[in-house]
Image (cartoon, rainbow, N blue to C red; front, side, top):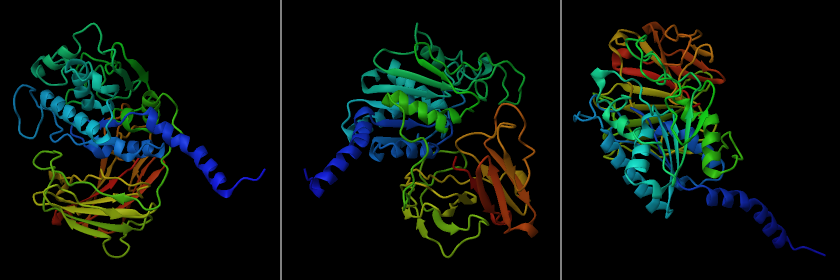
Length: 443
């Protein structure tokens, strides 16, 4: 029997289609919520991994909470900071937006750290359960970070009004929504019996390493992952995916695109960090030599932001190292060095980094920054300009950045940062001109 070429192509398409169709049918739209002081860009690699498993980008929504920092007192208004009520209200609006965009009756929610608090409040206490199929809380301090009386009204106080209300029932979950928590076995800086994150590191906190767990949820422990890695590490992605989809992902690594398109917004870092857009910021994008950090040619892209803060889009190749320069009034001009982007992203958000007072007298300053995790010694290899930064101490991972200062005579030379298998090269710019360099790790 002969088979036509058209039939062969149709058969091949039918064999290829089930993977994509299965992914779309099994997984509800997913909303990702960042932690305290953070922004949506931290979900970048997680979004890439979901996309690499056939989930359409328009069914994945990583959001910016406008004022990501919690208040010193949750009951007292504070400029550029948000209350628990505001966070839950904003989450409810984002859920409505994603449902309207996709037509889906229910969505899944994934939150890191503080991002888990409005998820719990919305689902369990604000009637959101019928709209939410899955709730995944990664490193969320569900029992608080401390129980100190002088900070009783803080959002993260285990004996404060917010967490007392959330934790007051016989169970922490509701039957309509499936709950998963992901925590570290010992390496979460904010789930410790002593306040190692504070100026009084030996003071008891009233919590412990199991503080992120919830009664009635599926509670998963992922070894030595740190506070952020419980959300953004590839191991955390695997657990998020199979909990929501009910199966293993086809890919854990990111599947690259040939010509990624990058975009994002410029947000405020002075006087307080927010996720509110900055207008009239000038953003330039240069291709760089990955071995030296030197610019290759003229700028690929230059744009002055409007009221929405958008600085893109720009199309690049998936093997181009980049330097992204952001200059905004009232902020330090920041030169962000990035390794190649394997896929497109519209959450390449730029938040200028300020020069600290002790850094202003240096010739130049280079910061090695890891947004999606912390540096753990001796768990990780961390080298900046040929040596392990002296500020990194063995034990629980507490730092996400390390800094080197260069004399003026050494400006312009390559400065190499190494984090395990990722290597990134930056160049220092004159601090006297109000400039700083950030070598931003991807993984």
